[in-house]
Amino acid sequence: QRVGLVALDYAVPSGREVDVRIRVFDSEGRLVRTLVQERVGSGEYHVEWDRLNERGQRVSPGVYVALMEAGEFRATRRLVVTR
Image 1 (cartoon, rainbow, N blue to C red):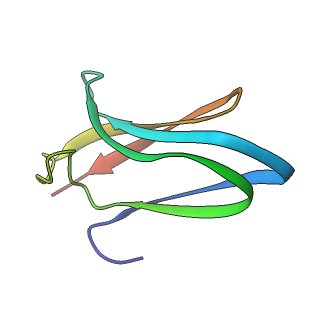
Image 2: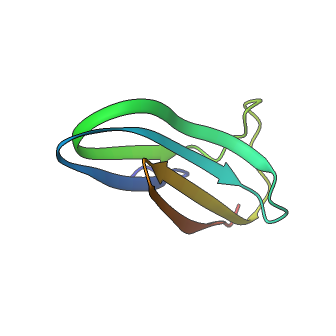
């Protein structure tokens, strides 16, 4: 993993195709960046967040939440940005 990147991995079961959306929110619940918004087939996927917002600016240190939605599946992951 390269310095300054936050890595997220996910998998889609074989024989399936789903709409996947992964978004990052700040601690106030505001959308920071959409990392993935596409239909994908079965397989394993790797996504990296470069700690930039939608405008290409570096985010402030703090706690962020990645929300993944894939079909009926929803999961969150806490992301900590230290600098």
